[in-house]
Image (cartoon, rainbow, N blue to C red):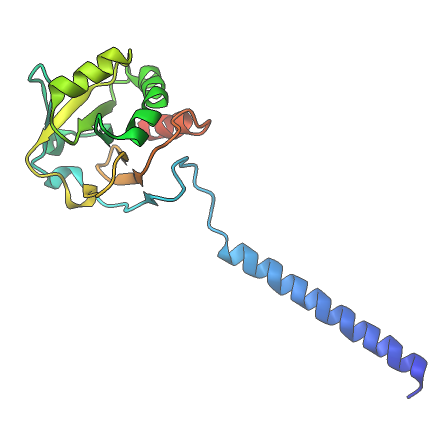
Length: 190
């Protein structure tokens, strides 16, 4: 075999190896990349348990007026729960955007919005909400929350769909002004 033929064969083989490698890499990326979820809470602290949680809890949320929401009795509604406390800086940081989101959705009959004061000090937390000019519905909890709600960190945001399944549990502060947040909740309300 002469030198010229050797270089041609070497060039063809190198090209085939490169093409095969690029093809395998691209195929691997397609398999490894998760499908895009329109949930804007896809980030650190996010879980998507996809299990029914509302029917098995005796949790009762009560506001300062004595009005109650019984978790196991809520049917065919989206439930938005934000666990917070007045002493929590990340909770305070997310509240302005959370208040804006609430104001956009508060008239929806298919949405139950609960700000859960983890300290159950409604007088103090209601005073804070009022002083900040927010209109968020503030509650404390009685009874047992579903095990899936357990967290050691706040703020924690939990969203339950109309079928009673938890679709989001996000631990940590959120920018509720995220451009996909409102459409995400509106899709759940359909």
